Length: 187
Length: 214
Image (cartoon, rainbow over all chains, first blue to last red; front, side, top):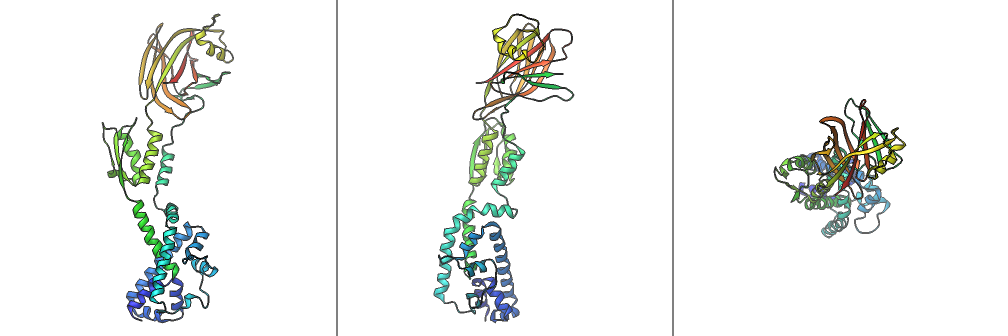
């Protein structure tokens, strides 16, 4: 395997496939062992995908994760849900395929299908971005507005007169039999 | 692999979407009662604390803000709550002498009826009255006759959909000597009767305040 094929494989493979290859001492693992450039690239891709998985898991309901893995428009299979959750691939699944077996036509279709799915989900996911940023320390207009409401509560109209007693003075507030009339006595 | 591609495409689209959502614009806000110097520190947190995105200086009552539509909407909502159009109230004052008066003055009949169960005085007499129109931060000083004078300030007028209140300081003087001073927030439509138990041996005076919204 040369660097070009290795990098293409890293970009299209999911982490389970890369790890499976590594644990099996496969062709990809052999190349990574001897190529610092590709190894660094693989580590970056894996790290980035782990970050993304953490974000999606924290922000999205499980049912959305299930939708995300159904990239070809059909209902997600149990296997796909497991893979989305990071479970090990089963024997005979696509994860066991060796590098270089994906045809150009299938690669093209494989990019178009998730593109369409992502476009359909884009609006929904955008709605969740504030939740993502809130959970991960990001800023949001809503959180700023909430903080400002705490700092500067909206002015309210009291139901009855409120007296601001001066320091060192006493005030008695007495309601009368007329609910409109309040007696305020300083002493 | 589908997952990887989906995540990458989603990341790309989300980034593009976020880029569109983050597109900034400039909006001008005309202040009602706040001045620019007071408003700018309140607005700045909504645009990430970047004071360079908020422009406004005295004596202008216009503040320009640069931010995303969501940020600018939040600024607008905040100002709608804290920078309401100026309202005006009319404050009617009545000075009432509390002592053994037999007759009933129709002008203070409602107060007299209410106080009968609370205070031990046998009767009341209206000895001076007056009214002032005032808006927020306005100070007033009015002679009521018979040596009485009213001084005070309207600190705030809060208007909500179905209610309003005025926060005011009010003092009553007799022959230049202060005999009463109170600070209170009074709902418009309510009546407050202010008294002082430290009057000494002389006549007892109470002050009736009736705020109404213009």
